[in-house]
Image (cartoon, rainbow, N blue to C red; front, side, top):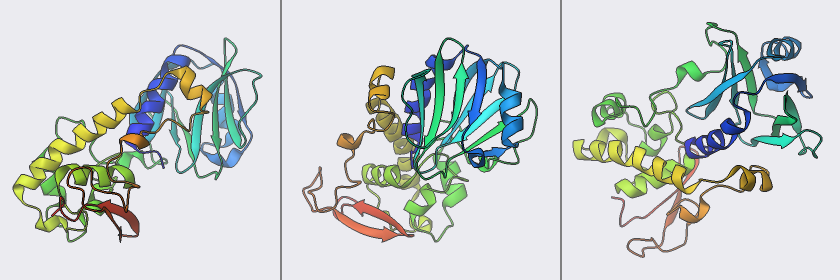
Length: 274
């Protein structure tokens, strides 16, 4: 599943290509991916609306329209967003097409069909997408050691699992929880209640720093993104531990170890992460 750095990368690529354009037609090939409202109403309500901007909240995209309405998109495991010229070949499993003026289309495809799209009218409360349940953004000024220890400091759950709780911190998943804990020198299996004050401070600094680093490394032009069909843009060469089990630690040379923590794969260094 794309995590915060990937979603932010896609947002930065897509927004300039659709900002200020109007939606001339919406085609719903797979109505079930439109979670709210019904597909017919979704398409009719969006027709003629103008895109104002795109924001990100956790792993969600929010397309803000000049009317005040907003389209929310979650890619889940295999979803993809592409801006392509009208009439160009479509990706397999293209489910929703937003046909814009000027001869371009915003296309949502999803092999496994887990991704979802919602439309909320101006001032409509979001009781549908789950976005309202998200915790703080890692770049928020209130994201502090005090916030982290206050929300997690009494938990008996592994710190890796805690970092992935979207109701506490929005946007971190399996990949970046490993990378963050490696940079912070904390064993992913340690329970949150055992972390010391200095370690909470370390996490409060490392989390936004690492996510910013990977956003920067993910940077890609719209042309490159389109050529890779929106899939081959991740910063895999820059990951230090995730996916590198059996390889030497980049700091000390100890062989990186893979474990299953909370049902999820985790890679760490037994020497650097105490």
